[in-house]
Amino acid sequence: MRKLTYTFAALAFGLAACGTSAETERKLADLEQVNAQKDSLMQEVAISSRLISDVNVELAKAKIRNDRLHVSSESPITASNDTLIAKLRYVVARVRETESALSQSREKVKNLSALSDSLRAAYDSTVGNLQAVVASQKTTIDLLTDRVTALTEENVALHDSLATGYYVIGTRDQLKKKGILTEQGGGRVLFVLWRTGKTLQPARNLDPSLFTAIDTRKVTQIPLPVASASYKVASLQDLDYIEEQRDGGKYSGTSTLTITSPADFWRSSKFLVIIMEGASKQVAREAQLTAEDRSASR
Image (tube, rainbow, N blue to C red; front, side, top):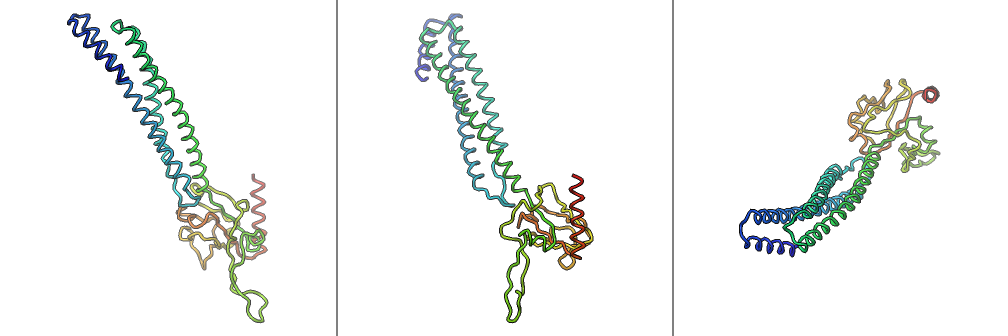
């Protein structure tokens, strides 16, 4: 390409030495225009290559950040996919413009009588090389676009996973039978046949299929099956973020629990375990009827 520049300069000098006729000036103007176009096209291709390289680097960084994310309530989605997509679209537009300009320039040079066959061939070869670079850039852009799309889908799936919460409501016996609540602590006392000081806590490994899954970004009210019963939260959520008031650690006379700040409420645990208390037979019967009514309405 540098050789082509020297050839243009030599030809321009030769034409200038022949005089300053109108024809000579026209040929000089044509040569200068061709040379300027060549430089402009080479610069455009170089800029596009640099932009593609920048997008590739940013995409690699975004992928690394995503791989380091942990599935927990406080994990942010840090990849700036919108920025990557915007940059890719900008590069695509530039490459298309460069491709069109190369084709137009190639056709224009064919019609310039001032160029010798060797000079025209050299310029044509330069344009051909640039077109090959542009074709390679288009292939790279397609690959980058696929990678950005895949990364975006991963981010959406991860974000949905982070925003999923699970809740279950039942009597102590029901929750213990399902393995959701387990007795922790306590010890035997001499001449006493049972353990003392036991507490009911959520099991270490909870089965999500035993819970109702919700989108914590949208669902801020947990429906309670029996308004006349009392409810106690056995899981680790911060109850300061529940709107309803507690009496002795229990919620009574309410049909819902309203979460005032989902991000804070679900931070400690994605599993909400609610114990339903009251006259056990009555509560269990009412809960069963409520569940049957819900099933019938579906």
